Amino acid sequence: MSTIRRVVVSSVDDVVLEQVERPAAAPGEVLVRSTIVGICGSDIHAAHGRHPFISLPMRPGHEVVGVVENVGDGVDPALRGTRIVVEPNLACGKCPPCLAGHYNICATLDVFGCQTPGGMTDYFTIAADRVVPLPDDLDDRWAALIEPAATPAHAVRRAGDLRGRRVAVLGAGPIGLFVTLAALDAGAERVVAADLLPGKRALAEKLGAHASFDPTADGAADEGLAALGGKADVVFDCVSRESTVRLAIQLLEKGGSIMIVGVPAGPTVIDLDLIQDREITLMGNLMYVREDVLHAIELLRKKTFDLDDVVTAQYDIEEAGAAFRASDNPNHVKVLVTVAQPA
Ligand SMILES: [Zn+2]
Ligand SMILES: [Zn+2]
Image 1 (tube, rainbow, N blue to C red):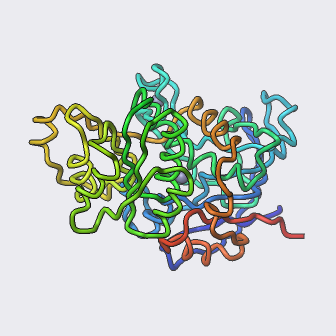
Image 2 (cartoon, rainbow, N blue to C red):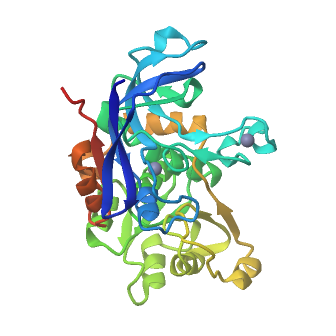
């Protein structure tokens, strides 16, 4: 019996490798050899015990890039050797949202690497319909950004036609940065980013935001409105705290929309009186479906930014603990874990 390494997270300071039996592809599955895995903001939330729907210990790795090593019965053998990313939403396919094509909100949704063991390991198996083949012009590091770009692609699609619109993006971590990118690509006339860190604001502008401001400063709403050149038609809240939803309402035109993209830590007070009075649409956003993944791939293929600006650190899987600590530092943007196979 051969064993493989798998990362187990019990807290941000307790990230270890466990040895488990190498899996084999069951019928309908593929066996994947991991190459690069991103650490998600949700992994860090969960490691701090602050994610409402992920319990510890967790075996992370929903942002995984790999190569199909083998296929189970009933799976096209031509998939062997194919570079892929994983679409981590594990849906039932039978409930009303699934039947309507909204399998990201499946009644019994599990997320690979969140509620099930993920891809931060040497090898894993997953249903063959959950892998997405990669174009040759996106190498593994670029491909690691597909999953974090898919949620923004989904949220921007749900926001409706952004052409000629004013957009504010609260939070300039990977999700906020990719919302900015996707909103610009969708034709938004003005995109303004908010983050408390000057480095993140500068990065958002480097990726194309027209302006940025500090959402925690005195007079932040006025500064945001000035930067927008008027009220926003859509605000993407990639932080989703009481303070950011309040700011979103202050920035928003009557009849506008707030897209809740960040994962709130739990029940959150909002100014419901203003939501009602201003006919504000408050919309939740969870993950994405295949069309959003394909859109994310096309967005990244344009390579409109410097990869090293977004991928700010990379660690070997043996140093997964250091990778999690780095990812917990808000000055980092995206931290990747390389799964180099032991000789
Ligand atoms: Zn993610
Ligand atoms: Zn379902």
